[in-house]
Amino acid sequence: MPGPPTLDYRLFIGMCVLDIVVPRNKSHAASGDFSSMSKSTKEDVLHELMEVSKTLQATITSSTIRKNKVDDFIMLLTHEECDEKEDESEKEESGSEEVEDNSEE
Image 1 (tube, rainbow, N blue to C red):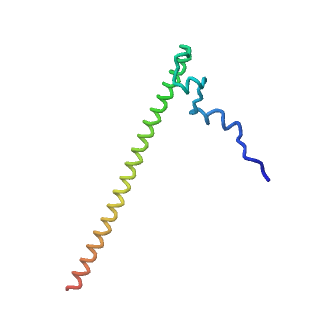
Image 2: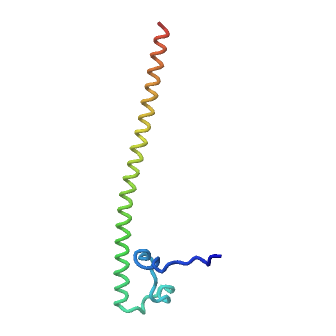
Image 3: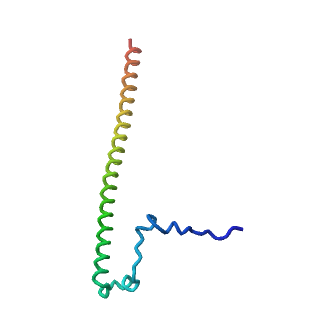
């Protein structure tokens, strides 16, 4: 019988875990009190948070642009499909009118 599944340590290094934030001092994070942190540590944290914010904003912007393009493409395909159905129904109507005209003669 196989043992329990294990996770390779490589899953937890590099790009896979960039978005995981681990507080350096759990008591600060839990209480929300950062006043006892040194000024350089606060500046480092602030700088890192600002970078994360910029990255998130860039991701949101590019995702919004991509979403808008996809939505535009969906609308285009939907309109083309509707136009094709209208053309088919017009052809059917004009074809049935010709048949009726021929039967009257």
